[in-house]
Length: 314
Image (cartoon, rainbow, N blue to C red; front, side, top):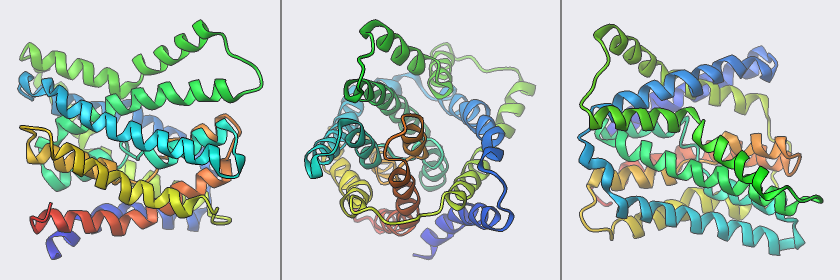
């Protein structure tokens, strides 16, 4: 147990430091914009490229693994959408945000730092591949459901173009494509460039986790919506449990890949859930509460999962 605490305390300590800084300084949340640009467009892409470019290319062909992980997240997402649509006669737009809160984990900011710290560099490939597939799925579903649930109707070609553009130009996906291409041709950048990428990669975890803490501090929970009584358990317990049950049945899946998939499923609701709710002006305060509360509770659930891994239970 002490080994697990030694792993999670420094990582969640960064989140707590960000939270305390946000509570003490009370600077505008817009002040995080440039830090987020650094994390999303520079540091994390550099990390993904470094991990993937050094991976044997045959490891990228595990289609059964990706099909299983995607199917589980897809099922969780749509289950939450349907529950949100039926309960209290919620609108499709509100149900879409609830689906994201239940199925879209913080796999960008928290996923790579936690998985690499817990399972080593071997976790880099499954984390990057799951991230690309799941982000593409969420980038597709969010605008589609918002368009279907809106008063007007977006033109199909315009909507398809918007979805394709968001997927193909996402920096993580571009970095993954470049990294896999480099691995296929056994190419590595010159030493000075590699050194720069290594420094950027090392900055990923401190910056991302600190930014998460600041975000939680600047978006305090005003009330606990009743929907969170089922959404948070789905995100933190049902999603990872379903991921373990399904992926563990896939033949030939390495243990590190299985553990990485479950860890990503166990992550709290992504900050992007609130960003999407804000951009579409729907379910904003409750989405913010879902992110903050699930993040705080995930300290317990993630610690529990890592303890089970250490003890060989899973």
